[in-house]
Image 1 (spheres, rainbow, N blue to C red):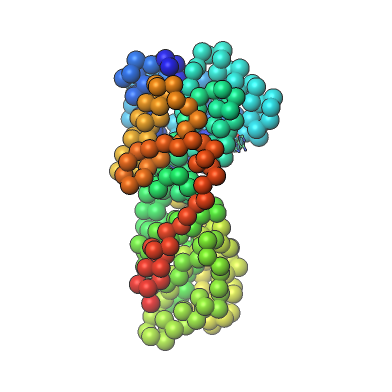
Image 2: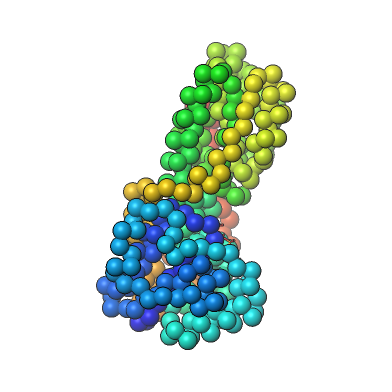
Length: 319
Ligand code: ATP
């Protein structure tokens, strides 16, 4: 392959720029021409495509978000939209596409691959909800951002001797909650993978208080419930002053961590290597610190497991 393109799609994640840089510079290094598609599949349909070179990805490594912008496109999911996208790729003479995004974006990549257009997915999402890879680009930065927030909230929570519920992102996955709950020493972690037992949680809070704990932090994954509702229930059942904090989009921003930049660079490089060898319909992943790849359809049907060991350990250590 001599001409490839790259786009970012779905929710943005810190480290996406490092992945774009790796794709562009690897392609240039290998003597390929490379194009950037703006605004994900939405921009692809509209032909928002520009030529990229070594310079166009200069000084972006430390920047959060994505320089190519991202968008969601319902039109792309239709036959008509798909036809338009394939036509644009043909018009520009592009032979392969790297899609940096989450599982929705990979379904789009699969649709293109099934119509004969080689596409490679690179997992970029803070949620860490792609089953085939142990880590997604953006997750490490996001959990460090959340940890910083937990530590700040902890100061005020312990001064006021309160319980604070902190709602974190993650969609249907509890990974952000488990990792930050563990690192932040949370007294409770509520995730969609485990049934919510409010009475059990309240008993733990009361027992903690009876042992002399003056405050508690509960990390709630967005897929497991709403912080405001829980605030009311916990205050009612424990009789202790309770507050809720929804961290929101702060979790998606900021400079990527070293770990995310390195992961993104390795994955971006591998994606181009695949296309160089005319291999499409793959998702790049990391397993036991090795960069590997999987068939898109197979990868999307793998069940997502959560880190039960870390979850259990956090419970033991937070008594
Ligand atoms: P994140 O997990 O960070 O939100 P995502 O990639 O899962 O990222 P989505 O909004 O689900 O985000 O998907 C991004 C885009 O991918 C959609 O706007 C749409 O254009 C395309 N897409 C999603 N699902 C499909 C599908 N089933 N078939 C074809 N294209 C799809």
